[in-house]
Every structure is written in C-alpha cells, then in structure tokens.
Image (cartoon, rainbow, N blue to C red):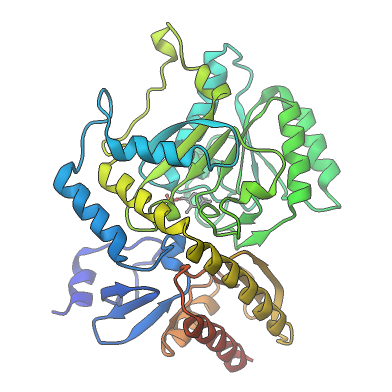
Length: 422
Ligand SMILES: *Cc1c(COP(=O)(O)O)cnc(C)c1O
C-alpha cells in the first residue's frame, strides 16, 4: 500500500467529508513556498498552509533554533516553573503589540487563544462582582475557532449547524458600513449594561470569506464599546504578524483592544502555540487575596519551550528589513493584480489588504460547499500552484518568502483558471 492508501485506512481529516473522498496527496518535503509531493510534483503554497507559514517551509534558521532548544529543555510544567524562551518571547512581544498590554497567557492554538480571552473576560466581571455582564458581542460572518466557546462566538454556519443547541447566546452585529453604523452603535448602547466583551477580527474576516471593512467605521464601533466599558478582544490569529501590511491589523485602528489573540503566524507556522495578551485592567482583577478569583485555566503544553523558541526565531526573521520589504512588495503586487482582474466578467468584489488578495467567483451557488472550490484547486494544481477557495471566495495569502517568479506564476495561473472557467 502506498501512503495515500494507508492514510485512508487509519486517518480522519479535518473539514473533509469522508465518503468518496479523494486520496490525500502525500507531501514529502517543504522548502520556501514550495511543497514537494511524493510523485515528484511541486506546488506553490499560495495560502501559507492555512495562513500559518510566514518565512517558508522547513526554514533552516527556525529549525536550528528548535533543535538547539530540544537539546536543552523540550517541555516543563508551567505552573511554578518558567524558562527563558517563554519569558523572552513575552518581553519581545509586549512592546510591539498594538495596545497597552502587560501580560502574556500561553496556550496551544488559535481556538484556545480565543477560549482563554472569553473566559478571562467573563471571569473579569465575576471577580468584580458585576454579574449582570454576561453576554458577548460578536460580528456576523465571524470565525473564532472550533471549540465550544470559540464556536459560540462564531457566526452560525455550516460549521456549527449540529451544535446550535449547545452554543451560548451571543449578540451578533453586522460588520460596519456607512449605512448601518448608526444602528450598530444603537444595539451596543441598548445592551451596554449586559455585555461582558466584544470579540472581533479586525478589518479582515478570514474563514468568513476574507471579507474586509473600513478602519474608520471599525473605530466607531470600538468607541461605542469602550464608552460602555465592554472588554474589547481583537482576534488577530489570522491578521497578526504582517498579514494586513502592518505588523497587526489593530495598528490601523485608534481604539486598541484590552485583549489580543495570536496564533497561526506566531511561530512562523512551524509549531502550535497560542497567545492571549491582556492589559493591566484585566490582569489586576485577578490579583487578589481571594483564591476563588484565580484564573483556573491551563494546558499540558502551556508555553512549550520548543514552540516559544520557534516564535522567537520567527520574530527575528520577521523584524528584518528584508522581510518587511517583502511584505510591502507583496502588498503592492497584489494591488496591481487586483487592477488586472477587473476585466473578468465572472469575478466580483476584488479586494486586497496587505498580503491578502481575495475576490468572489460568480459561478455556481454562493455558498461554502460550492464545488467550484474543489474544481479550482484541482485545476491549478495541474499547473503547480495550490489555491483553496473558501466556497466562492478565491484568495491568495502567500508566505513572505515568495519569489518574484513564484508570485507571477501564481497570478498567471489564477488568470488561466478564470479564462478556462469562462
Ligand atoms: C484560524 C483562526 C482561529 C482558530 O485557530 P486554530 O489554531 O485553527 O484553532 C481563530 N480565529 C481566527 C481569526 C482564525 O483565523
């Protein structure tokens, strides 16, 4: 049996209907933006392997740092103990995060980082004895992860359908436009006394289809939330670490969050790690003689030293002028390509924000399960490019190490698939 056949005997893949599924493609190696398949074919990973890979696959600098750390200390219980990589990473991140952050809480992934943020916010009000603050505010079309709290604050969709009876109540508001901003502010005002927190993906909603909205309008919402003392949670799991052109999407906003969630690009996409950072307002509510006011949350691998070392190495690479220039260059190239796409009749809502480019394809039904997505993936892979549309939303979000010829090829193959589908 080959690897794909062995896989099909024993593995259950995420977001994948198991009936009549296609055999998975064995990947034997990664280098830069390229994925190498067992059969010798290569693919440009234009979506950074689900938005995580920043500096390319199997980056030797990050690999070396993980290896060195593995020889030194691979894991230690994080209650009562600490270690250099965890402290160093917190020291380096806190000054560059968008807001007055003072504490880093570690967990394992994006979903745990939002779970932690929600629990931190809810218990904040409980610790203060203000128990009427029980509801969470979130955007329609949002995605904050797949665990129960994260699902609850994500918009109800095909992802959450089987679980609706088990999800807690959330007040959902539209993402802002000139037309609805007043009614959104009115909703916040109306519920201000019962809202514990507002969780939002700043400026780009990832899994909801790379939907983008204006910073000025977002600031108005945050302003209303702040006036009502609602804890603001920026979920920058996807937008963090340069994706939107600046280091964090919240940098485009005047109103900074009280809590920020990070994962995905945090380790350059090499290891699983989540961060929930908070400011002193939140932290001080937990510093108390009353032991009941402790934050009782943790994971076996909290602040895993290997993952923290990977994050430190990724930060080294990210902060280099060379990498920041690449982010600017991808941003500019995307804008030009967006212009070029305007002529295609089956394309609409072309948009870019930093290294993210997205558009809607007007073929088939407008829904996540639209088979056009699979068709596009299969077609572009025959040309050595990997795209994975979210339903009708085609998007490109490459690792920052992508070369000029690879980005050009990505654009060309995207245009090719559009003309083929015409
Ligand atoms: C991917 C994502 C998550 C969930 O992260 P996982 O590591 O997949 O659990 C949460 N929020 C946003 C905005 C994301 O894009």
